[in-house]
Image 1 (cartoon, rainbow, N blue to C red):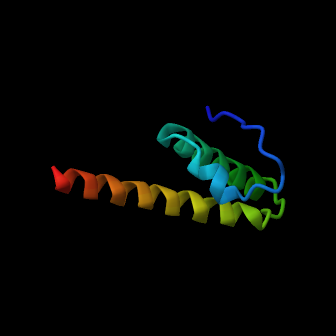
Image 2 (image 1 turned 120 degrees about the vertical axis):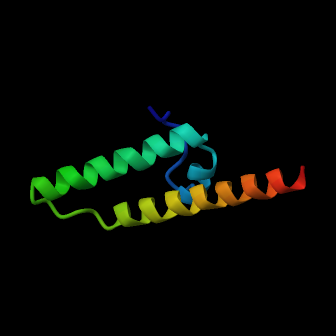
Image 3 (image 1 turned 180 degrees about the horizontal axis):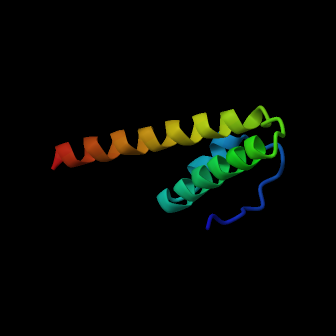
Length: 75
């Protein structure tokens, strides 16, 4: 399960996401997917920021994947 960090509200989400480890980031993504499913089942409007979460998480995962590929090619 992801850890909650004591960030002030004015720290952008993308900065907070970068501080998470790979497993924590995947946990966070999984939790956002679960909450979206619950919202849809309960016929509750999905908060607009949930789409931003998914976009930022996927971008960070892609960036990390590219960095790993580049690092492997150097060796």
